[in-house]
Length: 153
Length: 112
Figure 1 (cartoon, each protein chain N blue to C red):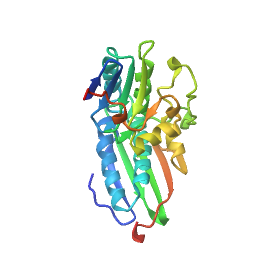
Figure 2: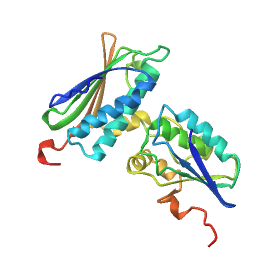
Figure 3: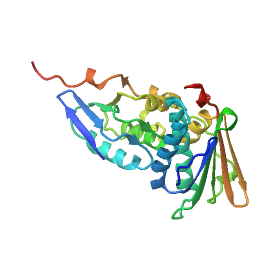
Figure 4: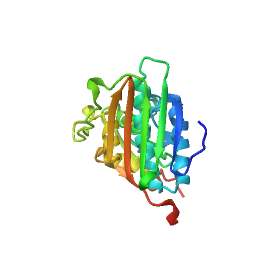
C-alpha cells in the first residue's frame, strides 16, 4: 500500500480479508484528511468503506482465503468518489440488497442484529452503483461535493 | 475483550476500553458482554466514551448484548462520541436504548 497520493486521488491495492480492513481504513482516512476533508466527512467515508470492505471480505471472498481488491479514490471536480473492484463472488441475484432499515419498534427478542450495512452505504452516499463485468465486481461510491482544500478549510 | 466493570448495589457500569467495535471484534464483544452482564445489578450501563468507531457488525453486537440479557435486566448506553451517535441515529437504534450523555452523571457515588 504505497501512500503516494497524486493531487486529485489515490489508488490502493489490498487483500480482501477481514484483518486488512482496519489498516486500509486508517490509511484512507489519513490520506483524505490531508486533502482537507472535515471530521464529519472522514467519519462518513470511513463507515461506508468499512461496510463495503467487510462485505467483500465476508461475502465476495466467502469460502476463499482472500483475494485482490483495488480501491481508487478521486477528488476530481470537487467530489469524493471511491471505486472498489474485486474478483470474488457476484452479488446474489446480481444486485446489492435494497438496504431497507430494519424495524426498531419490535419486542426485545426480535430486535435486528444485522441488515444495517447496505442501509448505511445507501444513506451516506449520493449514489452506490454496483456492476459485474467479466468476473469483476465494481462498486462506485459517490460521496458528493467536498470543500475545496485550497480554500483554507 | 477489554471491558472494565464498576458497580454498586443498584448499577453496573461496563466501560469499553478499546476504540473500535467493528467486524473484527463483534463476536468477541458479544461474548464478553454476555459474561459481564450475567451477574450483578439489573441496571447496566454500557459506557462507550472511549469508542470512536462502530460499524454495522459492532452495532449488531451491541443490540445482541441487550437481547441476550436475562429477564428483568436493562441495558442503557452512555457517552456516545459523534460518529458512534450518528450510527445509532441513522439506524434508529437510538430509540431502542436509553442513552445517557455522560457516564460520570451515573457513576456509583462513594460516601463523603
